[in-house]
Length: 575
Image (cartoon, rainbow, N blue to C red):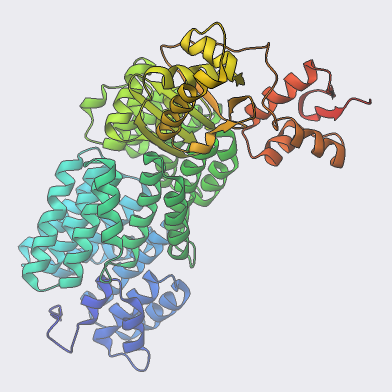
């Protein structure tokens, strides 16, 4: 005998309603004592989807032995399939699906829906997206033939994500909108909220809207109490990626911390892997490719051979790290999954011609293409316009660091993943910045270099210099990045200036910025020989900035270099 799904008005809130709203603890609590046979599928589902797979499997074994209801047994098996899929146990999921397929000739329309939907879900998590779409369409057709409205909601939801991953982003979003509207008509408020939130997350993941709007919408959506476990987790992971791309390292870290509380506990392998991928991306943006190397390896280990996760990882890795090993395996992943991002990553890692950014519906892929194609000036202009400031160092083929970038009418400030852009200083202030980009400048040197004054008169000229410096500091992302000494100015330790279309003239004739060498001298005197990394960590600057200072001090004869390669050390020269 088939069972008509309960509506939210029956028995308070129906178990099925609570289950698909992600309220697993409530389902477990209501069925903990002595669940009726009709409630067992939802009880098993709540256990499976909350990561308690051993309990779910045990409950299912007993239920199958006792229940003659094929529809209830098939529905329970579907929920267990979903739990196995989220836990990354694809082999177990497919065994369950095959058991259900064996019952297919003997089932009614609603039971057939659970079978086809289970197959579609298993193929989706298996990474066989063409097969998942075919099974998903059969599930939707079966649901419509059986007038099974709630099943239509589930089918539309899954098909929407399949289409989006295949590159048909707008078509996928339309299906999600249809699913949400149908859930609303059926009275499933929590499901409607989750579906609309899922649409917001999908829009953000594929940057259908601009990055700042996407961040605002996702932050609002994940704060909604009715949102399901999986949707909130996905939203926070996407939020971390968006914030990294926007150039907001602090918010990216905060989102990752929040997602960690949801993504890592239990047996949800998909959540763990996606969290690792987002952390690797945020690290690559903030600290560079090498710093992210171990994180990409950690993400690959967490994926444990699952194709869709390897495809997602490969897409990020291709643009933010890359390796010979990735070049070998990415074509096979793209061929098996037929995912749009996997195919793009395979082309990129192989050095093949990439599509015009305007030709892809995937806004995030479009941003990465903008950071890798065309001239540097063209790349920067597009990234500033789209507010994807975190990608600017990559567009300039620079490792993340602590720098100022002067570009046309923009001054970009970058500090290891935190990137801001504002109007560039003009007139004398701009020329002062260019001068300081070459090193320390005394006031007489600035008077000569910026204003063409052959003789510096403190009484007459100090006010002019002070005004220019004040205007320069107001244009900087951090005023402290210009340091004042008794007789001149310099950029703060570790800050470099990159000026596109303008010449930065280095100077060797003036003394080094006071205070830049002394911390190094003190560390070497206290700790003995140190590596470049030791010095960079002590000064809180990039390795390249520390190396620049160490080379100059070596040339000055204050320190000497010993060893080579990773064994290179610097020590004080004996007086």
